Image (cartoon, rainbow over all chains, first blue to last red; front, side):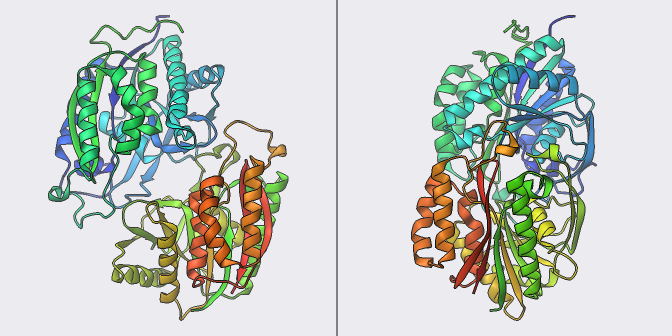
Length: 303
Length: 269
């Protein structure tokens, strides 16, 4: 069997507003649009993903929070209606997803071997979180590629940021090794917003873009600084600054998806393609891709 | 104001899902006992707040008259499902919403099919036997940016709005929230540290003596050192609804929940 590959990794944030703005048939509430620059950014990301033809998409979402270890969806088919508990007026989405349980179990086992607590989620009545669904819809609305869904262990919140990120680093290494052994062509999705300062009240018309702008200037400046470094491929600097970014911009990357993804990719000093940046209720969101295949970095060495 | 009974209960699903684990079983029994005391107080409604119903935009209240479904906890999915069958008194909820908006707290209702009711609310209503057609809820979300003072103001505002009714108040949330982060032998569950245990016992003792001033001066340090769930906002909800005071409290149970602390407490006005 050929060894598996990581074709690319996307920073793929999950504001449900983007699904709401797009008006797909799966989503009950209907809008007049809104957040177009970010939705257009996702259109470009979709086109890139389509060319790569991956076997599997892996997503790490901060809205499936687990206290005891890192959990993986372990039921082959999950479907239902996902209602966002924070934005129920915007996101009531009929989902139907296929899980690559084999790969999920392999990552679970690799993680356990590396000393992190891992667990399969095998309850068929489980409700998939809206962050996972939003990211998966925005990157591949056809829902025709199996997925691996990983919870956000809350270690970055109960430990120091660095300790929590070390857990995510180990999870990333486990993910990389499992993909290599699986022989599959994988794409990684880090479902994270950048700066996370947000407004505390919603406009009467949620999609009224005259009300949309960065909530916090310092957060905005941090986003631009980090994006510029990512665009230049200066990832070591990005990770050196990461704890300060988390602290000062209240960045959602604290939850670990970004670190998990880059660890799995082997922390390449590779320039990212920025597909677009925009705010959602004041938070900073960037859709970006690290194209490992294009850079000749998709082959994985044995750990 | 007619607060006819008041309770603090944990929101973990473990007492409902695994009562065979001794301390969790004792919490289950204590919540059932609290539910009977609540019913005996003959309330018209239950003014409930659960730390696990997160809101970040606006203040949310449950305005769905009857919520049904099957819930699986995001942490404890291996222990099975929790049926959801919860009634709300929408007329009373709407009064609270109107009162909040009149007080410049931007507020709205949540009335959606399959809205994900949080684990804490489901566990509390199930074990306490409330949230029924005869004993409906008036349920508020936990806006994460509301500090304890704001929670008390919100509860007081709601209680005042419902002063023509007999109201039971319930705060759903745990004590020290330092859970074990590894797999443990469930039969050997305990509070994760001696320090947390001491802190929890100190706070419960202050509740039993109804020493409100001492509680208020101690809670910030407790929050910093024992990290109670959401800063013990659940207790502040009860305190706010009771107009900032109670005469005595009875601790029905104090037990560990996978290393965290949990108590079932009844407060008497």
